[in-house]
Image (cartoon, rainbow, N blue to C red; front, side, top):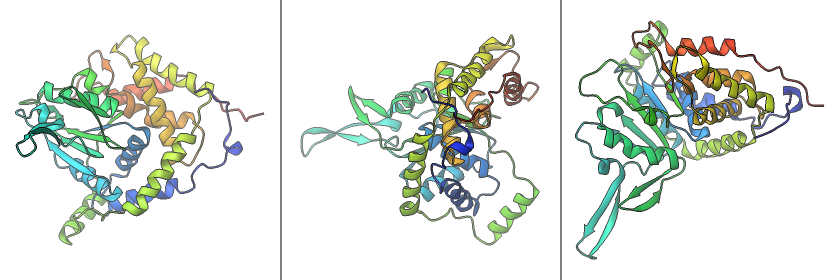
Length: 331
C-alpha cells in the first residue's frame, strides 16, 4: 500500500458520523457498564480491522458483560463458549449428525458459526480445543470432516482469560496469541465509576442496552467504508516497519514481532484513523494501538507478570526510541 503523504488540510473527512457512532456505542454500553469507553473503542477497531481481541483481567470487572452488551447493541448474532478442560473441538466447530429419516449426515453447526463468539476463560480449554479456533480466526472458515465451511461476516472472537490462576489452565501458545489483533485489560473502575455502578445496581439498571441493529448496521457499513478509504504514506509504512524491527533488535527481547504483527499493526492503526474521521494515517494512530497490538506477541527476557518488567511500558519506551516521520503537505 504505497500512497503519497498528505496533510490534514488536504483531505476531507471520510465519514462525518464516525465519532458520533463511537460515542453512541460507548454511551449505550456505558449505561450499565461504567469506565469501559477505551475497551469499546478497541472492540470497534477490531471489528473494522477484521481482527480478534483478547481480554485478560481479574474476575468480576465486566469482560463477559461487555462482550454481550456490545453484540446486543450492534444487533449481531452472539454465541458464548464457557471453556472447560473436558470441552472438545466438536463443541466449538460442530459436526455431522446422522438423520435416520433421510439416511444422510447433516451438519450441526457449533457456536463458531456466529458474528461475535465469546470464548470465556479460553485458557481453561485443552490445547487441541484451543487450536480448533486457529483456522476460524485466521481464515474465517472451518473444516469439518474434510469439508470447508465459511463463517458469517463479520466474525469476531472475543476471548477472556484470568491472569491470576495457574491451576487447571493451559496457557495459550505463541501461535494462538499471534491470531489476536489486540490484547487488553479493562482494569478496575475509579471512585466515581464505583459510585455510578452501585447506583445503577440499586436502581435495577444492570440490563445491557437494547439492540439498535437498524441504526448500528448502517453505522458499521459507513465505518467499514471509511476504513477502506484510509491511506498510508511511504513514510508511515517505513515508520511501522521500524517499530516492528526494533522489537527484534533489542538485547532484552527473546522473540520479536512477526510480519503478521506488522500487517495487523497497520490495519489497527487504519481503523483508529477511521474512527477519528480521517482518511490518512498519522504516527499518533500507530502509537495509540501499538501497545495492544504488540505486547502479547513479544517474549521479553526476564518478563514477569508481577509487574517488575511490564511489557506495555517496555513498548512505550521503544516507541520513544523510533524516529517519528514529519507530515509534509501534498504538493
